[in-house]
Image (cartoon, rainbow, N blue to C red; front, side, top):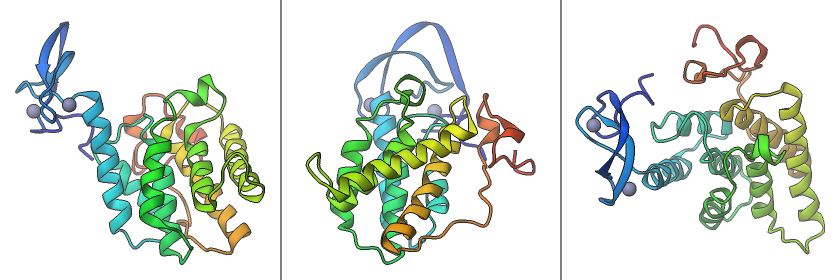
Length: 235
Ligand SMILES: [Zn+2]
Ligand SMILES: [Zn+2]
Protein backbone atom coordinates (compact mmCIF):
# COMPACT_ATOMS: atom_id res chain seq x y z
CA UNK A 1 0.00 0.00 0.00
CA UNK A 2 1.42 3.38 -0.95
CA UNK A 3 -1.15 5.42 0.91
CA UNK A 4 -0.64 8.19 3.45
CA UNK A 5 2.97 8.91 2.64
CA UNK A 6 2.81 10.95 -0.53
CA UNK A 7 1.03 14.05 -1.85
CA UNK A 8 -2.70 13.53 -2.46
CA UNK A 9 -2.50 15.66 -5.61
CA UNK A 10 0.65 14.35 -7.34
CA UNK A 11 1.95 11.50 -5.13
CA UNK A 12 5.36 13.10 -4.43
CA UNK A 13 7.01 13.09 -0.99
CA UNK A 14 6.01 15.61 1.65
CA UNK A 15 8.43 18.25 2.91
CA UNK A 16 8.22 20.04 6.27
CA UNK A 17 9.26 23.64 7.06
CA UNK A 18 10.72 24.95 10.35
CA UNK A 19 8.65 28.11 9.94
CA UNK A 20 5.07 28.00 8.59
CA UNK A 21 4.33 29.21 5.06
CA UNK A 22 1.11 30.64 3.64
CA UNK A 23 -0.07 28.18 0.99
CA UNK A 24 -3.21 27.90 -1.10
CA UNK A 25 -5.32 24.76 -0.61
CA UNK A 26 -5.33 22.71 -3.84
CA UNK A 27 -9.06 21.97 -3.29
CA UNK A 28 -10.76 25.17 -2.05
CA UNK A 29 -8.18 27.79 -3.00
CA UNK A 30 -8.18 29.43 0.44
CA UNK A 31 -4.83 30.36 1.99
CA UNK A 32 -3.57 28.75 5.18
CA UNK A 33 -0.46 28.87 7.31
CA UNK A 34 1.12 25.40 7.13
CA UNK A 35 4.30 23.55 8.05
CA UNK A 36 4.04 20.97 5.27
CA UNK A 37 3.49 20.61 1.54
CA UNK A 38 4.69 18.18 -1.11
CA UNK A 39 7.93 18.75 -3.02
CA UNK A 40 5.86 20.50 -5.71
CA UNK A 41 4.20 22.79 -3.14
CA UNK A 42 0.77 21.10 -3.11
CA UNK A 43 -1.22 21.48 0.07
CA UNK A 44 -4.77 20.45 1.08
CA UNK A 45 -6.42 22.10 4.12
CA UNK A 46 -7.85 20.05 7.00
CA UNK A 47 -11.45 20.86 6.16
CA UNK A 48 -11.11 19.79 2.51
CA UNK A 49 -9.20 16.69 3.59
CA UNK A 50 -12.04 15.63 5.92
CA UNK A 51 -14.75 16.47 3.38
CA UNK A 52 -13.07 14.30 0.78
CA UNK A 53 -12.64 11.39 3.18
CA UNK A 54 -16.36 11.48 3.92
CA UNK A 55 -17.69 12.14 0.41
CA UNK A 56 -15.64 9.30 -1.07
CA UNK A 57 -16.75 6.95 1.73
CA UNK A 58 -20.40 7.85 1.07
CA UNK A 59 -19.83 6.96 -2.57
CA UNK A 60 -18.47 3.53 -1.54
CA UNK A 61 -21.47 3.01 0.77
CA UNK A 62 -23.88 3.83 -2.07
CA UNK A 63 -22.20 1.60 -4.63
CA UNK A 64 -21.29 -1.53 -2.66
CA UNK A 65 -23.48 -4.62 -2.74
CA UNK A 66 -21.53 -6.25 0.11
CA UNK A 67 -23.28 -7.49 3.25
CA UNK A 68 -19.96 -7.44 5.07
CA UNK A 69 -19.32 -4.13 6.86
CA UNK A 70 -15.68 -5.04 7.62
CA UNK A 71 -15.04 -5.45 3.90
CA UNK A 72 -16.84 -2.15 3.24
CA UNK A 73 -15.01 -0.14 5.89
CA UNK A 74 -11.65 -1.53 4.75
CA UNK A 75 -12.37 -0.16 1.29
CA UNK A 76 -13.14 3.22 2.87
CA UNK A 77 -9.99 3.06 5.01
CA UNK A 78 -7.82 2.39 1.96
CA UNK A 79 -8.81 5.78 0.55
CA UNK A 80 -5.74 8.02 1.05
CA UNK A 81 -7.95 10.79 2.46
CA UNK A 82 -8.94 8.60 5.42
CA UNK A 83 -6.19 9.04 8.01
CA UNK A 84 -4.71 6.21 10.07
CA UNK A 85 -6.47 7.80 13.06
CA UNK A 86 -9.06 10.56 12.98
CA UNK A 87 -12.66 11.44 13.57
CA UNK A 88 -13.69 10.42 10.03
CA UNK A 89 -13.92 6.96 11.65
CA UNK A 90 -16.89 8.27 13.65
CA UNK A 91 -18.73 8.53 10.32
CA UNK A 92 -17.36 5.57 8.35
CA UNK A 93 -18.27 2.95 10.99
CA UNK A 94 -21.93 3.97 10.74
CA UNK A 95 -21.82 4.28 6.94
CA UNK A 96 -20.40 0.79 6.47
CA UNK A 97 -23.07 -0.63 8.82
CA UNK A 98 -25.86 1.18 6.95
CA UNK A 99 -24.68 -0.17 3.60
CA UNK A 100 -24.25 -3.75 4.84
CA UNK A 101 -27.56 -3.66 6.72
CA UNK A 102 -29.39 -2.51 3.58
CA UNK A 103 -27.63 -5.14 1.43
CA UNK A 104 -28.51 -7.85 3.96
CA UNK A 105 -32.19 -7.03 3.49
CA UNK A 106 -32.57 -4.77 6.54
CA UNK A 107 -35.19 -2.07 6.43
CA UNK A 108 -33.53 1.34 6.25
CA UNK A 109 -34.24 4.70 4.61
CA UNK A 110 -30.74 4.68 3.16
CA UNK A 111 -30.12 8.15 1.69
CA UNK A 112 -31.74 9.93 4.61
CA UNK A 113 -29.75 7.80 7.05
CA UNK A 114 -26.46 8.40 5.25
CA UNK A 115 -27.03 12.17 5.37
CA UNK A 116 -27.81 12.04 9.09
CA UNK A 117 -24.80 9.79 9.77
CA UNK A 118 -22.50 12.41 8.23
CA UNK A 119 -24.19 15.12 10.24
CA UNK A 120 -23.96 13.36 13.60
CA UNK A 121 -20.70 11.46 13.19
CA UNK A 122 -18.67 14.47 12.12
CA UNK A 123 -19.67 16.32 15.30
CA UNK A 124 -18.11 13.68 17.55
CA UNK A 125 -14.54 14.79 18.27
CA UNK A 126 -11.31 12.86 17.76
CA UNK A 127 -9.60 11.70 20.96
CA UNK A 128 -12.91 11.06 22.76
CA UNK A 129 -11.77 7.48 23.46
CA UNK A 130 -9.07 8.81 25.76
CA UNK A 131 -10.64 12.07 26.95
CA UNK A 132 -14.34 11.28 27.27
CA UNK A 133 -14.26 7.56 27.98
CA UNK A 134 -16.39 6.75 24.93
CA UNK A 135 -14.61 5.77 21.71
CA UNK A 136 -16.20 7.36 18.64
CA UNK A 137 -16.22 4.07 16.71
CA UNK A 138 -18.60 2.58 19.29
CA UNK A 139 -20.61 5.80 19.43
CA UNK A 140 -20.87 5.68 15.64
CA UNK A 141 -22.54 2.26 15.97
CA UNK A 142 -24.92 3.87 18.50
CA UNK A 143 -25.66 6.65 15.99
CA UNK A 144 -26.34 3.99 13.35
CA UNK A 145 -28.83 2.33 15.71
CA UNK A 146 -30.42 5.62 16.72
CA UNK A 147 -30.90 6.67 13.09
CA UNK A 148 -32.13 3.21 12.09
CA UNK A 149 -34.75 3.07 14.81
CA UNK A 150 -35.63 6.79 14.73
CA UNK A 151 -34.56 7.20 18.34
CA UNK A 152 -34.86 10.52 20.15
CA UNK A 153 -34.24 11.39 23.81
CA UNK A 154 -37.95 10.66 24.40
CA UNK A 155 -37.99 7.19 22.82
CA UNK A 156 -38.31 3.97 24.79
CA UNK A 157 -37.18 0.85 22.86
CA UNK A 158 -35.04 2.71 20.26
CA UNK A 159 -33.39 4.69 23.07
CA UNK A 160 -32.56 1.47 24.86
CA UNK A 161 -31.21 -0.26 21.72
CA UNK A 162 -29.01 2.73 20.83
CA UNK A 163 -27.41 2.89 24.25
CA UNK A 164 -27.03 -0.88 24.47
CA UNK A 165 -25.18 -1.29 21.17
CA UNK A 166 -22.75 1.49 22.16
CA UNK A 167 -22.27 0.03 25.64
CA UNK A 168 -21.53 -3.47 24.34
CA UNK A 169 -19.15 -2.07 21.72
CA UNK A 170 -17.30 -0.01 24.32
CA UNK A 171 -17.00 -3.01 26.60
CA UNK A 172 -15.35 -5.08 23.84
CA UNK A 173 -13.08 -2.14 22.94
CA UNK A 174 -12.05 -1.65 26.57
CA UNK A 175 -11.21 -5.35 26.99
CA UNK A 176 -8.59 -5.18 24.24
CA UNK A 177 -6.91 -2.14 25.83
CA UNK A 178 -5.26 1.06 24.58
CA UNK A 179 -3.56 2.99 23.19
CA UNK A 180 -6.02 4.27 20.64
CA UNK A 181 -6.28 2.67 17.24
CA UNK A 182 -9.13 3.80 15.01
CA UNK A 183 -8.81 0.66 12.89
CA UNK A 184 -8.95 -1.80 15.81
CA UNK A 185 -11.82 0.07 17.49
CA UNK A 186 -13.78 0.34 14.22
CA UNK A 187 -13.44 -3.40 13.54
CA UNK A 188 -14.51 -4.19 17.12
CA UNK A 189 -17.51 -1.82 17.06
CA UNK A 190 -18.64 -3.26 13.71
CA UNK A 191 -18.29 -6.87 14.81
CA UNK A 192 -20.40 -6.09 17.86
CA UNK A 193 -23.01 -4.29 15.73
CA UNK A 194 -23.32 -7.23 13.31
CA UNK A 195 -24.02 -9.65 16.19
CA UNK A 196 -26.39 -7.12 17.79
CA UNK A 197 -28.46 -6.63 14.62
CA UNK A 198 -28.84 -10.36 14.15
CA UNK A 199 -29.91 -10.78 17.76
CA UNK A 200 -32.37 -7.88 17.82
CA UNK A 201 -33.71 -7.76 14.25
CA UNK A 202 -32.76 -11.09 12.69
CA UNK A 203 -30.85 -9.22 9.97
CA UNK A 204 -27.80 -11.24 8.99
CA UNK A 205 -24.92 -9.08 7.89
CA UNK A 206 -21.68 -10.95 7.18
CA UNK A 207 -18.30 -10.99 8.91
CA UNK A 208 -15.03 -12.37 7.56
CA UNK A 209 -14.03 -15.69 9.16
CA UNK A 210 -11.08 -13.78 10.59
CA UNK A 211 -10.66 -10.00 10.72
CA UNK A 212 -7.16 -9.16 9.50
CA UNK A 213 -5.76 -5.64 9.75
CA UNK A 214 -3.85 -4.27 6.79
CA UNK A 215 -2.87 -0.99 8.43
CA UNK A 216 -0.33 -1.97 11.15
CA UNK A 217 2.63 -0.47 9.31
CA UNK A 218 0.97 2.97 9.39
CA UNK A 219 0.34 2.92 13.14
CA UNK A 220 3.34 3.87 15.26
CA UNK A 221 1.48 2.62 18.37
CA UNK A 222 0.24 -0.67 16.89
CA UNK A 223 -0.08 -3.28 19.66
CA UNK A 224 1.02 -5.92 17.15
CA UNK A 225 0.64 -9.44 18.62
CA UNK A 226 -1.52 -8.04 21.43
CA UNK A 227 -4.14 -6.91 18.87
CA UNK A 228 -6.67 -9.56 17.78
CA UNK A 229 -6.53 -8.27 14.19
CA UNK A 230 -2.75 -8.10 13.79
CA UNK A 231 -1.49 -10.05 10.88
CA UNK A 232 2.24 -10.57 10.29
CA UNK A 233 2.13 -11.41 6.61
CA UNK A 234 0.40 -8.13 5.85
CA UNK A 235 2.42 -5.89 8.17
ZN1 LIG B 1 1.98 17.27 -4.95
ZN1 LIG C 1 -9.31 23.60 1.34
